[in-house]
Length: 132
Image 1 (cartoon, rainbow, N blue to C red):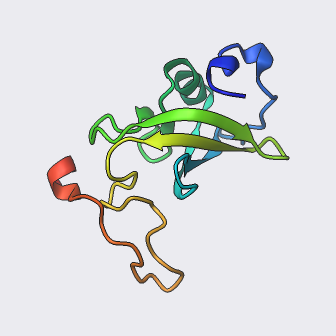
Image 2 (cartoon, rainbow, N blue to C red):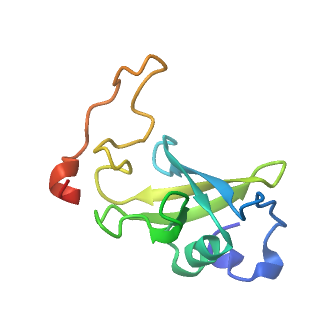
């Protein structure tokens, strides 16, 4: 089911949000299937994502809603949202706009192997983008 078809909550699967009202969202690049990031959505973030066609998440540390790319311009246009078998995790398939999804300057948040070694180069200079 594409995003336009999900605009009506009546057409949406019953989801299992956790005790804090959140559901995990795995974000995958529609072009090559790469996993770009994992974030969390509350009901409001999911609603905004469906309404606008761009990813919105809930920041667990800042306790606020945020639109991906609001600062960097590296937005994510939603192509499709899937629900896992337990209805407690979403797979959000996106068109990644801009060179990367990770605030560290990498294309994907999964740029290190299990030892911590960086296995992917940076895609952009995060200091220039975020001013940090």
